[in-house]
Each structure stands twice: as structure tokens, then as C-alpha cells.
Amino acid sequence: MTKHTNEFQVWDYIVFSLMLCVSAGIGIYHALCGGRQKTSKEYLMADRQMGALPVGLSLLASFMSAITVLGTPADVYVHGTMFWWFGLTYLFVCLAAAHLFLPVFYKLQLTSAYEYIERRFNRVVRLCGTFTFFAQMLLYLGIVIYAPALALNQVTGFTLWGAVWACGIVCTFYCTIGGLKAVIWTDVFQVTVMIAGFLAVIIKGSVDLGGFGNIWEFSKEGGRIEFDEFGADPRIRHSFWSILIGGFFTWIAIYGVNQSQVQRYLSCKSMKDAQIALYINAFGLFTIVSLATMCGLVMYAVYRDCDPYTAGYVMQTDQLMPYLVMDILAEFPGIPGLFVAAMFSGALSTVSSGLNSLAAVLGEDVIKPFFNPTEEKYTKISKAVVCSFGLLSIGMAYVASQLGDVLQAALSIFGMIGGPLLGVFMLGMFFPWTNSIGAVVGLFSGLGFSFWVGVGAQFYPPYTKWLGNKPISVALCNDTITTISPFDTTMIPTTPEPYTNLAETWYSMSYLYYSAVAVLSTLFFGLVTSFITGAQDPSELDPGLISPVFDIMCCCLPKKWRQTLHCGVPQDEDDDSVQEMTMQTGDYNKTMMETKGVQADFDDDGYINGHVMVVTSQSNEEPKMKEEQTGI
Image 1 (tube, one colour):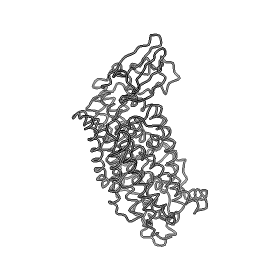
Image 2 (cartoon, rainbow, N blue to C red):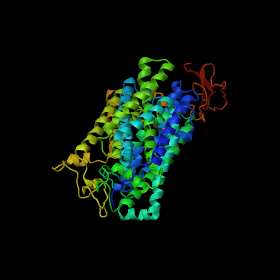
Image 3 (cartoon, rainbow, N blue to C red):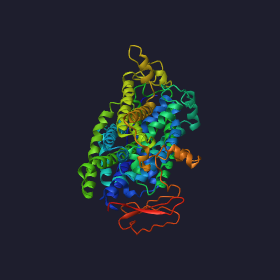
Image 4 (cartoon, rainbow, N blue to C red):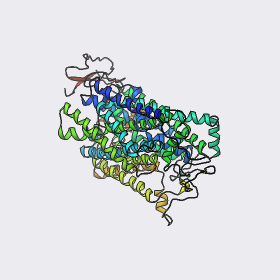
């Protein structure tokens, strides 16, 4: 086997360009139709009228980016199929997000998730969380833009930074003019392109190798088929427990409290629609990780006797997937273009989601409270903020180019920064004794612990035995450029001197546990500090700020027992009589509660004389009605 010299053809450029044009066209359409993005509610929240299916696919596309398209198959090629267990992790993550976090955010009807933190604690804690989120998303968006540009550079010769600018500018354009509606509908289109790209590789590889059964056998012989690593040692990079436990904390920080996802939940017509969207997302995540795993097995079966990285055909493992595409699909005009379009689709969907969420958080947490602009001015400022963050994320791509493996780098960032943020939200939703001082101390303690282990691991890389690298071969390579491979199981990436016990145990921890370490340290120091400085009195809290965790997980217990588990937090007495909340029309969401003996009438626009009628009743009392000002 020799290094192929296939390059993009005219049809590949046409297919790739069509994907960019369709994405931009969706943004133009939503800029010119409907309300034309003239209000912040339409621009940032899609008028809270989106259905479950597009939101579910948008949730899927938001963080299944080019990092997934490039990184997951390469990870399976190098380390085997343990990564597939993330399919199970995603199920638990989506169930927890739908029933423990979503109800709190949805009932509060926020625009910024960090508004919850101010309601639960104070503005100082909110701003600390806001700027931590900025750091997390900008670093991540830099990786997301850089990854497909690297792939395009590998397969076409198109300049690396030209590709970075192309991706960043197109995404910034349609996100700036089209708002959240454009972002969601481009996500739907782009996730379809991503799946088509995966299927093209799997089908062509199966045909070339005599069926997927042969691919499975080749992979099994090469040690890639592995689902039974149940070791509990936290230093094992991918074990069942590190993926299930560590992966849960990593991804619940994304699907539970990350602004990009929360913003999508709140754009749904009803809480039921938002929960269905999460179920759709769970199925989609399982599908994507399964397709990506299969692509990794195809890659191994094709290169089992001539590893392109060891042979020097590619410079980084993240280039293996596009190299495979140009190797086996170049004879079909337009198909390599389809795959590169799939990579860019993943990047565009993630970046657009990030830009919109950054604009919402900056607007709601900083611009509105401090400058109080008019509605028209605020919408224009939001668009300018999206454009500015888009340009800044292009600059962050340079930082991403220095981080190495894109998949591990991305998940590490979410663990190291997203973990402490998740911890703060958990302190607020699950621990009613936490006060504002405890929340701040917990946040910075979590950041300190996660960066300690994450940065330390860069100076003291784990021994090869913990990485799970599988054997590779260059036996049939005819023009090997180098024989040095990071996959060589005899290599140990260490410093010349033996590691200290601390480095061997602490810094060798699987990157998937970074988020768990951050969350647990945030919870521990937050609670200890709260009790030392004077714990919050649970009876003074708004019950809407506390997650219904015990009502869901202990629903079979008698009501009296569940009340004890609420730890003194007052409960809404109308919970048993309220059967469903549905969001209808009007500038302020129309709330209908089915309550025995009580009816509330609304006009055609969802208003009652400038007020929203909230109906409550108690089991042994007459129904009561109260009015809440909507601010109109």
C-alpha cells in the first residue's frame, strides 16, 4: 500500500459549496420572513414556538460536531470500541436532563440559564458563572472551527486558515441575521448531512471488504472489538465505569445546564415538547455514536496492515478519517465533498449554537442589567454581539491548533470548566442549605481541582498501559516515511525520571473523570462553606428554584414521606391538581391550568387585561385565583 494522491474534484467543490449555500440561505429566509428577527424574543428564543422534532435534532447537532466526525472514528481505530458505551451514557444523561433540570428552567421561563443562579443566590454568583461560561464556550468553539479546517486542508490542499475563515464567516453570517430559528433549522439540515457522510463511508467500506461481517472479523482479530473493560481503576482511559460515571458528569453539564441546550428547551411550545425533544436527542446520540464507531472499524479494516499515521501519510490522528474518505470514495464524484460537508455541517451547527447562546447570556446577564436598552436597540445589540463573538471564535481556532487530539481536548474542556458550573447549579437545585458564599467558594474550588489534574496531566502524561492503545502494523506499507508511532504499546510517554506517586495516581486519571472531580469538589466546598457561614433556611426558598428530584425518584413513597425529603422547602399545594401546562400564544406565554372547578378565559392573543391568571387549588379548600403582573 502506498500513500494516495487523490484530491477534490469539481463535483466535490460543488457539493461542499451547496451545503454552505443552503445553510446561509436558511439564515436569509428567517431574516426576511415572520417577524424578521425584530424582537429579542424572536431572535434569541424563536418566539418560544418551536416543535419537539426540530429542537430534538438541533440538540443533537449542537454538540455532535466535527469533533465527533473526526475524533470518534479515530479513537475507535486507536483504542477500540469501548467508546460505544457512551450510547448508554447518553440515555441516562437525557433522562436526567428532562426530569431533573428541565422542569426548573422551563417553569421559570428564562432566557439566560444564569438568571436562575441570581434568583437562587445573587448577582455576584451569576456573573461568576457567566464569565466562566464565556471561557468554556470560546475555547470549545475554537476547537470546533479548527477541526474541519484541518480535515479540509488534508484532503484538498485548501489553506488551513482559509478554511477556518470560511467556516467562521458563513456561520457568523446566518446566525447573525437569522437568529435562533435559523440556527435550529440549519441544525436539522446539517445533522442530516452528517449522517449521510457516515453512511457513505460505512457502505463503501463494506462493499470493498466483502460486507460488514468481514470488517467485524478483521477488527476482532486486531483487538478493536472490546466491550468488557470493567476495571474500576480511574486511570483506565475508557472503561465501562469511566464512560458511564465520568461521561455522565461530562455530558449532563452540557445537556442539563449549558446555555446552548437550555435555550433550545425554552424555545419549545410546552415542557412536554421539550422533554420529547430530549428523548429524540437521546435516540439520535445513540445513532451518531454507533455510526461513528462503525466508521472507526471500517478505518481499521482498511488500514490494518498499513497504518497511515505510523507510515507518515498523515500528520495527526484527526486526519485519518478524511484520508480514508479520499482513499476509498475518490472514484465517486461529489462523495468526498459530501463527507467534508458533513464535517463542516457539524462545525457550523455547534458554532452557531454557541454564538447564539453567548449573545443571550451576555445580553441578559450584562447588557440588560447594566445598560437597560430599549427592545429595538437590544435586538440590534444582540446581533452585533453574535457577529463579534463569531470573529473572536475564529481567533480562538489558533489556540485550538495547539491542543492536540481534538476529541479529548474538547471533552477535557467541558469537564474542567463545565464541571464546576454544573456543581453550582446542583448546589442551587438539589441542596437548599447552600448560600451565595458557598456557591462562589464551590465554583472556584471546583475550577482549581479540575485544572490541577487537567494541567498536571499535560506535564505527566499517563503510562501507555492506561491508554488502551491497540497494536498496529505497517507491514504492507511500501513507502513508509517514519516508523515512530504513538500507538506502539512499548512506548511510555513519560519524563526521563520515574513519576512520583502523586503523578502516577492523580495526573493519570482518565480525562472523563475531570468533570466528576470538579462537581464533587464544588459540592463539598460549597456545602461546607455554607454551613460555616450560615446555611440558607430552606423554608425561605421559592420551591420553583428546587428540582423535583424526590418527587420523581421516590414517587412510590407516601406523600408525607416525600415532604420530609424536601428538607423544609415549602411545596406548591396545587401540584396534585395541576394536570398540564401548555404554552400558547401572546407576547407573554399563555398559561392554562386544568383545575377542578375553575376555568380561566383568555382573549385571542393570550392576555387577560394585561395580567396572566395563575390558578391554584388545594385538596380541601375552594379554588383560589391570583394575578401576576406581566410587565406589559
